[in-house]
Structures are given as C-alpha cells and as structure tokens.
Image (cartoon, rainbow over all chains, first blue to last red):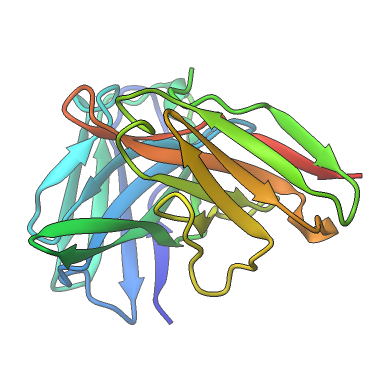
Length: 127
Length: 111
C-alpha cells in the first residue's frame, strides 16, 4: 500500500525558504502513470493547490505562487520536494503532498485525481 | 477568493439526501472534468469523485457526482453520521497557463 510522508521544519522566520520533502513508500515516483503534487491549507480555511511535477521533471505551479516556488524530484530516493522562498505569515498552513493518477489513452492522458495523500505537516512562519 | 464557488454549509438528518453545488466558468468546469474531495475532521482530504461522476474503488455508491455546463454537484444519499465533513470540488483551469483550482468548500453537518 503506497504511503506518502511529508517532512521538514515546522517553524520558519519571515523571508526564509520553506523546504519540504515527501517520501513515497512502496511505489516509484518514476512511473509515467503518476504525477506528484503539493497542496496547502491554512488553519480553518480551504485547500490551495501549490503545484505538480511529472516524472519527467516538468512542473506546473499556482500562478499566485509561481515566482517563489520550485518543485523537484529525487528518483533515487523516491522523494519529491517543495521549496517556497521569501515566506511570510500568509504561508502558515498545513502542507500536504499527494499522488496524482493519469493514464494514457489514445495518445492523450486522462487524469483521475489525487488518489493518495500524505497526512500533512504543519508549517508556521513567525518572527 | 476561490475560482469555484460552493455554499459554505449544508445539512441533513440521517437517511436524507444532501446536494452540494459547485459553480465555475468556461475556463474550468465548462471544459474540464470535476473532482470532489472529502475531508474528515483533522485528516487529509480523500478523493471521492473523479471525471465528473466516477467513484474510486471503495467509495460508497451513496456518493454521486454530476456536471452541467459550468456547474457541478455532489449528492449524498442516505446521509450517515460519518459523512459529516468538509467537501471540496476541484478542476483544472486553463487560464494563466493552466493551474488546478479547489472550490471554497462546504461543511456538511448531520443533524
């Protein structure tokens, strides 16, 4: 049973860089049927998509965060990572990593949603 | 401000049918498939519906999704106490080079 686990510092100061890693167990992040996403949720608020990265390394980001976000893969460790630069208090949230499923059909991918999620890790930005 | 608009709350008694709406636009729901996620208290979200109306393995058939034009709906029939949760619609949005968007979320309360 595939599992995802987020890890990283829980407390940051304003202007620092948030670095989180998601470790994937019992699966390979290199499989072409998957893509890997980050989502965050401020306390008491809704979900916000941060971005996703494909096994090729190609990534898409939320336009509102694009200038500060970088995602990457480490296929040797079955891990993917998130870096968010110049954090402020507005970046305080629970951060989730998730696996997305897609299947190639007639030369085009069909997407089947984010089917496996990590438990989430709380990040606080405070001076 | 979410691109996809949901009512903040919905409620029903056990056994009732509850429907949650999700309103978008031609840049998202109107041209892309809709997903629904359920988030139980203090847990990670769970995929409930994909491709507008398909249930992943293990999701009870009490949950059903539909889409018409730029709006989508999630229906919960035979409401149970364990269905009390936050529900989010989601879709890909083709504007601004493309990005994924979640709805504002609906809290379902079982009375």
